[in-house]
Image (cartoon, rainbow, N blue to C red; front, side, top):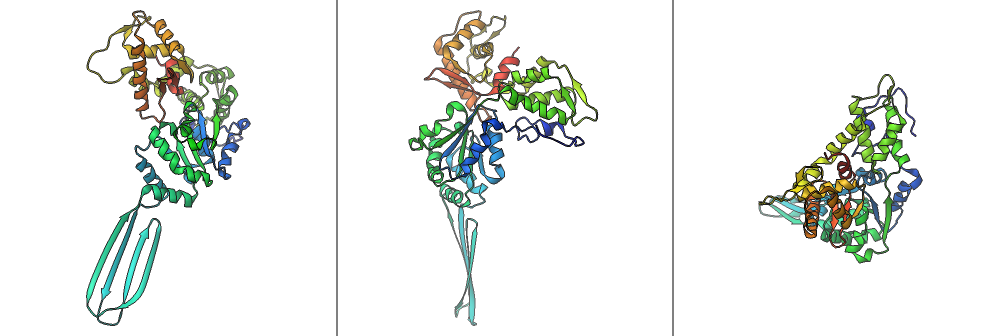
Length: 423
């Protein structure tokens, strides 16, 4: 546990940072030696490093700790739409240019030797030349020539020269064709020893091999497992004392049991406790908290984190005809999209892989009317997966594998909403 000056004051938002880079409550999980393993990418590893773990398990925080964004070329998988955009962004982060321009000016006169000056700019390098010439006619001439380089070529050249590590967060979010183009392009840099790290969710960790078979045996996988109870407990046990708060052990134990192995959710819980007690910074006098309304806390976190995407999935795609109403066992009605989501809520999933037949059984449990046909359910799952993939978040909250007939719950916030957000 970290030691801090007792007189030092901290803001609550400085202590608990859900979704950001925590410093005061950062837990390196030393027993797993994740930082040490990742640092080996700097030691001429000559392998693509695949950092994999469930969404919001701390993959990005860990990678950023070892390879700070200020010293690397860093991308989010959903931040560019075309391969050309990707290479242009690398050129920009390297502070290189794709345009080459050349201007030549001459001042000719009948009197003596005259100067001829030329200036040429390419990438970051500027070269100037000067010489003496002699002319007999009075004339002034200026000429500019320009040429645009290939962004991919310039980006790869820049990476090779700068030796800056390349990090692609949410690699799985890229379409397969872009994944293939990217892996093939950086393959030679990887073999030369440049650290290249892709961050992906577990069931998509082999995408790099699937799109480029030559990478078989040249990938170093670092698994970031879900956080265990004691690892999650370190967050409130470190953070609350900084605010001069003592929270009863049974409360923080309950928080850990509901966090679905996610430090991000635990940070949210702790932040919400501060909000509920209107604690904005370190208190002058110690505060003891022996009771919280846990359902109110969990409901608030669920509404703030998972409701938007749930509503999108519940609404489904646009269509002209009204959907058939489906009766639920609780007496309410919904359409087939709401029915499938209520069935998922019935399962109260963690970050799970759900077999199709398991979901069908849950649909039967929450229904009081006729059951939808199998092809109707699979069509809805397919559409939901498409909606999730087109959402602004970098990782789809669900991923339906039609051929395997399995549904992946990939986001702990969505799973948590299924527990506490639905009436």
